[in-house]
Amino acid sequence: MRPWIFLAGLGGVIAVGMGAYAAHGLAGDEIAQALAERGSQYQLLHCLALLGADRVASDSRRGGVIAHLSALLFLAGMVLFCGSLYLKALTGQPLPVPMVTPAGGMTLMAAWLLLAVAGLRR
Image 1: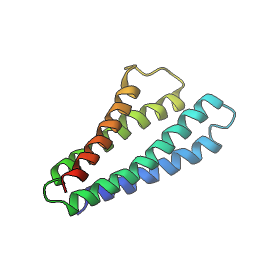
Image 2 (image 1 turned 90 degrees about the vertical axis):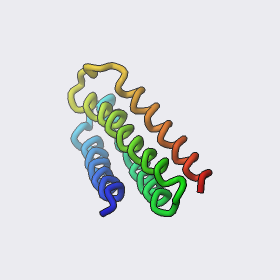
Image 3 (image 1 turned 135 degrees about the vertical axis):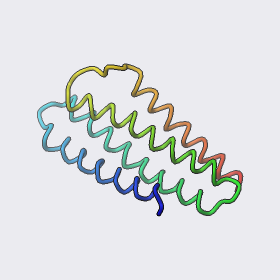
């Protein structure tokens, strides 16, 4: 089983669904629509990055552990960053923990950095 591929596929389904909901279900609420669209775009992009991390992890001996850690951070970053945007778009309320979105963005940046390091170690 390749869990990163499974999770990338599942994340892609969620991202496409949220993008469609943003376009149709949130029409008329420009702020909520923009938040959901941004979350959807970032999630789709990072689902592809998750596939790339899986590829590096499966092809690499020395960088495999780092690529797996990168994939884990991509997943955590998507949950934190995109999930917080979705939550705010759907509820219209401020987040109970205000630093979740920036923390998710930083997690995604760390994932990209680790993926780059894994590529150097090959």
